[in-house]
Length: 86
Image (cartoon, rainbow, N blue to C red; front, side):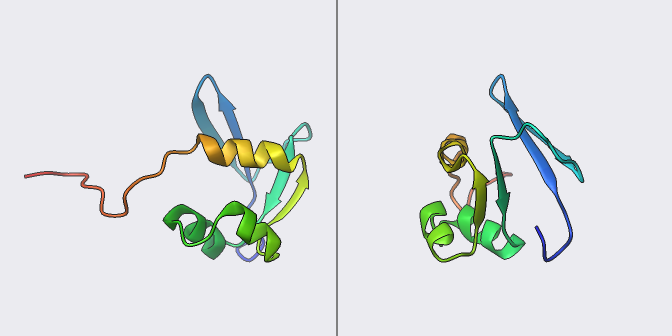
């Protein structure tokens, strides 16, 4: 996330997503660069990965198909998902 100077490494292993702040993986399948606002738009369904890449809001270096596969593994949650019920 270049606009805030943060770098994360994401690893999916045994169905679990782990992240590490300020880390770089030399053996990464792909490197994705985007601003936090673009990540928000992806999570909210405002834009798709393909749209954001085509618009130049996301840069992918390496295996773009692995990025698409990763995004496909993520759950889609309803924005108004109830965390606590009374």
